[in-house]
Length: 441
Ligand SMILES: Cc1ncc(COP(=O)(O)O)c(C=O)c1O
Image (cartoon, rainbow, N blue to C red; front, side):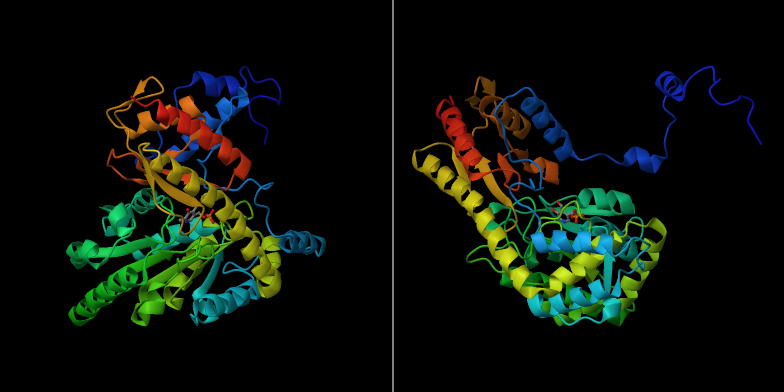
């Protein structure tokens, strides 16, 4: 039946109504959700670039496709899958061919043998982290995670959980160890770890990870005897193939297999294959939990697109092409991270107030500008946001302070991300920073 008005005769347009009305108050849950600070900073950078100002954009954890393209054989296989007509719903758990490729890759890369029922494909890592939280945590449950770290505080909010952020420091390579988690184990439900870590670019060492894994396994043994629900572990390893000389990637289940029934491993094509926009990720874990996460995905969707699933399955099986891509990509990352490392080292040797951690993995570098209480580019630096603004306005050097990753110390640590910049642009940006720091008073 038609409404009261015939189309086109409405007194006011939808646009007018929306512009004039007070916004309808959303749910309490929606009110509690906040957007990404990183994206806000990135918007400021884009505005400066639009005005024609020289900015070295080290902010977003993404790639510029002209600097870091996806592997050509993967791109070709996506086109091929589309031409084959692979455009209908994929199975909720992911196409079998891809789950088999992930199963083989997990075995060959990480030495971990999982059944096919323990593998779930999703639209990138995010929906799998989300469903991992929802499959393990009840509202109010305690979730332990290191800070700084990427987005854990947001997932805690989505799950209605109680976050227990555990600060990590440069002295411990920005990772947790057994001593850090021990005081919180008795009533924790979930521990979330990420290595190589966003934002620090550091890899958790074998001993630290083994210590943490053994502590969780010990806690679960006590709970099993008392008939209590166990503690779970989400291990986000989206950067696991992006490690550099001297750094190694380890998994908690590789070191302590007893953790297999409670551990969810998360990975994706987003970082290792530079395919952030393709939206293919996977979770590997115990079949009962993966089964529940699959059921959730069936309702909220967020599946990986079918053509990308088919193409990824075929690409991951082409081990020569995969190895070639990894060599090229890691070299390109090291060119950039190495250029920053050498540039900052030279500044430090000159006596400028900067220190950093040598590149280990991911696409990030941790840098500390020790200028609090001083003046930089005419701006007094009292907070990390002052520092960020001074670097951006005074040197066109765009960085993200660790605060954006839940860290609360005003001590000058920031993240540099190199996926969207060339070596040439880095050299120019470093020269501007050097001259800014030289004028610090
Ligand atoms: C540690 C970590 N996990 C997961 C993601 C998100 O991955 P995806 O884009 O596949 O959802 C990111 C993105 O920056 C990340 O840094």
